[in-house]
Image: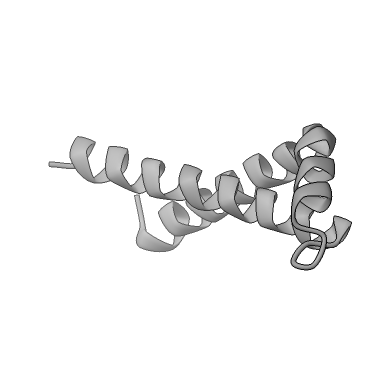
Length: 70
């Protein structure tokens, strides 16, 4: 596979997982807003959760990909 195809695939996977996590995480968002109201608004908490989920999925995907490509 080409480098562009692989990087695009990882980006789409990270986006999709982050999007899904954002949709199913209203309890976590409300918790963050209640615990740290000076730091997180509802939008910021949602963005933080989706970004964190996307980053974790991307790192795990790259580690698995690099291990399997040896």
